[in-house]
Amino acid sequence: MATVLFDNWNTDGVLNNPAIPTFFGLAQPTLITRVYLYFFNGGAGAQQVLSLTLVDVGTGAKFGAFLPVLSPGQGAVPNASAEFFPFVVLGPGHYQIIPTDSTGVPSTLWSQNPRSGSQGFARVEGVPVGVVIPPSGTKTPVAPPPLNQYERANWGTSAGSPQRILSLQLLSVFASSLTYLALYRITNSENSSQATVTTSKGAITLEPGTSVDVSTQEVEISSLKPAWGTYQNICCALATVAGPAAPKSGGGKSSGEGNGKTNGGHNGEEMPLD
Image (cartoon, rainbow, N blue to C red; front, side):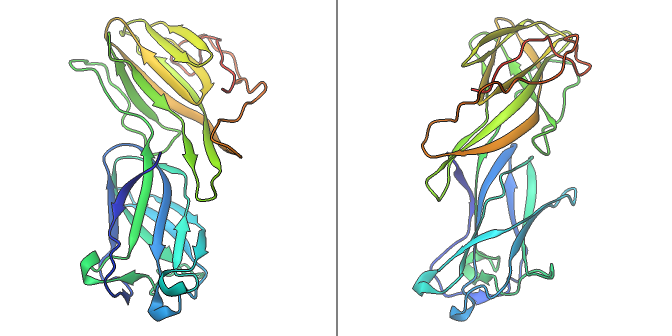
């Protein structure tokens, strides 16, 4: 489930128009599931058509704009609470939260106070989507942490230390289960050791210098000797179901044939969506 990554909300009186930019930091790739902002505006609420943009402070990359779900705030103030559900994967770094009005200008009605550090009231929630564990002592170049779900991240394993990569089952405010279905390409490095890729549908042996595509909600990579490589989310989708169980899919085969080498192919073994 999602955890709170940043929260500067408090119960003191508020003013409009934050004097200080509002930032949050990430130590690892994270799926941002909810950003919750507050627009008390003297009891008048947002009074604006809002959208949200997240900006990578280091690179300037922008994510959004995302539209809100508006609801009453404290004292039944209309449209004071604005909840955004980006479902975007952000890499490690610092990100600025920028709510804008219909013209794209940063909102001046966003609530802030001295206790929030003069930053806008914000609560950011998300879930880490992979642990980057390059094996110690390796001299093999490995991919950097991903900036989004389509870029590569590293995996590393040894006996008794498997690595688990999760796509996600999240509970939304509407009490529906959102299931993140992923097509992963998992590559074993040329001078690595044999590894095993396991999903709920079975296990696949991954030789050094080969890769495999698996459509799954959860995958575990294990090995008897130190092994390492990269994984890449090459396709994804969100599905909504009525209960907490993941949806079943008939078929859902990954496409394409390859020679199993790291030049974009795979070893021909495919897994249907769990």
